[in-house]
Structures are given as structure tokens and as C-alpha cells.
Amino acid sequence: MRILIVGAGIVGNNLARELSQEGHDIAIVDSSLDRIRPIADTLDVLTVQGNACLPSTLKRAGIDGMDMVCAVTEKDEVNLYVCFLAFKFNVKHRFARLRSMEFSGPDQVFTPEELYVEQAVNPGEIIIENILKLLATPGAVNVAEFAHGQILLRQFEVPEDAPLAGKKISETSGVSDLDSILIVAIVREGKLFLPNADDEIRPGDRIYTLVDKDFLPFLLPMLNKSVDRVDKIILYGANQVSINLARKLEEITSDVSIIEPDREKAMEAADVLSKTVVHHGSGTDMDLFNDINMSDADFFMSLSDDDENNILAALLAKKNGAKRALVITNDPEYLPILDSIGMDITINPRLITVSAILKHLRRSRVVSVFKLMEDAEVIEVVVDADSNISGKLISAVKFPSDARLGALLRDGEMLLPNEETRIEPGDSVVIVSLSKAVDKIDKLFGKKNRFFSF
Figure (spheres, rainbow, N blue to C red):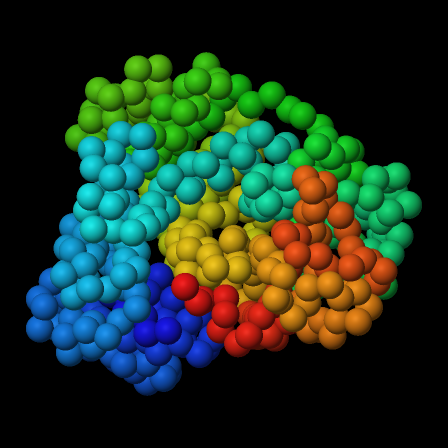
């Protein structure tokens, strides 16, 4: 497939890398030569430096013959106009990253289709949705859902006193009588690996589990997690994401506040929020922390657009008594550092955006994609009758060593497959894979690049 990516920032760069490695013909456009040059030096893609709002620039990138355009610049208006031009050039599939809630969500004035966008991806909406799911799952540090919400992916940190601590993967079934829970990946010292039966779960590990939604309450005691009330939540940064999140939080808790360093932004947030208390101050103001009783905070969430201030504010909030802290960081280089210093939850908008776009790119067979880390993802595939794997026993399938067949949903029931399980048409199969195994999985479930056929 021929795909044009507009915007060579963090998201565009990552999309170009992922899709070019999977055999697609990629062109990427950006106005910044500093962004374009590294991509030209490292990837086998066509790079064009220029203004993407000009038809002549898009023509130099070959838009006339493109199957798809992904507009992922940092400006909504540029992404919208690129999709309009793509429509005029008869590009059938048009994706846009849109940050403003006016272009997506319940308050949108126009539908994406009316704006010539086939699919809009709003990372802010996804961040808010994920935070609300995290609040609903005590102790979870990452969340995702598959098979229409029937199969849940949850990441937890393993405490020393957890029943699972010190157990081998093969022994975990003895900790609980349940057969609807599976540990599919472990993050240890900032590195992710797919465990084998003899691998041991250690205190401090962050484990990814697949669990039937009905059995999630039974998983929590295995990790010594209990359902704690979350009454007091403090947000840092009065941007669009935090303001919309505060509106949601006002419905479920009575004590929500925001700290914002910019006086004008603080006043604007106070004007639109009815129950949330907005404080003008910095994320390092110890006097302010004392005034708002940071020691009573159940959750502190750093949501500003400044990575460094987010990290520092969250660390100081934890030091001053906040029970849990969440940090948004746009720079992926910070992720392993935050894990190593014990940050409770980190959210990377880039991984969220890439996951959302890949989900739609692969919708012919792959119905969902969730990036665990830079080089690992969870894929949900609906098995077609003509798939190479359809009708086969698991024991007869040569599954890649860098991937795990996690779970499948059949007739509304989650199953943990074993060697005697036969894959049937219509099954929703959830696979955990390192990036280098994606092409092998592709071959198992259909012809090469059939993931992306339309």
C-alpha cells in the first residue's frame, strides 16, 4: 500500500518506521529540514521538505497515486486541510490527528466526514478514557480492552507480599482456581520480555495480564490489591485534557483541584469548571502543596505540556504524601527513567496515537492494536475462514518465539488456548508480540500484507 504521512514529528517518524518495516511504500512530508533529514538517513522512505498545505508539495510526494494519507502534524488546521486536499486528489483513506474537542467527541460541531476526514484520532480523548479506566482498576498502571471489552489487558506492579511474587509462570494457576487470567508480558528494570513457563515473577516486576472482564475482581487479591476509595484528586496543568478530565472527575468524586502556573490559563479554567478548585501556582510550590493538603491526595496527575515540569511536580507530590502519581510525557526517552525511579503511572501520547492509527490501518483482519512499549504490541485479530491458521490445532501452528498467543474470544467466552485448542473462523485472537515478529504473525493469519488490504 502507498501511504503518505504528513508531519515528521515523533508520531509521524514512528509511523513511517513501523509501516516501512512492514513493507509499505511510504512518503513523508514536513516543513522542517531538521526533522526530515534523520528520516531520510535511516529509513527507506521518500522524504519531502515543504509546506503540506500547498498542492505542489503534496504532488512532489506522489499524492496522486496514494492509497492513504495520515495527517499527524501538531496543528489541527493543517491536518484538516491536508485531508481536504487528499480528498480533492481522490485519496480514499484519510486519517487525521485532531487535538481540539471541537473536531471530535460529544461537543463536535461537524462530523469528521464533513471535514473530509475518514477517521479522526484524538489522543486527549484516549488519555481521558484510559485515566478513568485506571481509576476503576485499583493498582493498575496501564489499561487496554479487546474483543468489545470482554478481554481486558491490565498492567500491575507486583508487591513483595503478593501471592504471585516468587511464583513461576507455570505455577500461577495454583495461586487461583481461575482459568481466565494469563500473564503475557513482564517489564523488569525497564525492559519488556515475553515470559516462558519457567520464568519467575519477582517483586517489583510490572506484569501485563489478560483477564476476562468478569474475573477482574478475582485478580486483585492475587496482587494484594484492594478497592480503595479515590476521594481527592489533584491535576497539574490547566490544558484542554485536564479541563475535560476534571469535568468527568466531578461526576465521580467531590474533591478535584487543578494547579496552573499561568494566571490567565488558571482563570480561564476556573470560569468553565463548576466544582473543580483551580489554584494559580507552580508544581514545585511547597507552600501551595501544604495549603491544599497534598498529603491527603489519593491521586496526583501531571498533565501539562511540559515533560520536565510534569516529572518534577509528580516527584514532589509523591514526596509530600500523594498516594499515587501519574505523569504524561511526550518524550519516549523518559519512559525507562520514570520506571526506574518508581513513578506509578506514565502515559505517552505518542504511543497512544500510533496505536489508534495502526488499529484503523489494520482493520481488515486486525481490529485492535495496543503498543506496550516501543518494540512490543498487543494485536487482536478476527480469524477469517480462509486464514492460514483457521481450523488448525495450536500444536500444529509454528508460532513465532517472539510472540505469544494470549487468549481468544469464542461465542462471548474468553478461552486460554492450549495445544489441543483448534482455531475456528470468527474467533477473536489476542496476540502479544515483539515488533520483529509482526510479519510472521501476518503470514499465519493470511497472505503477506493482508492485514492492510481494503
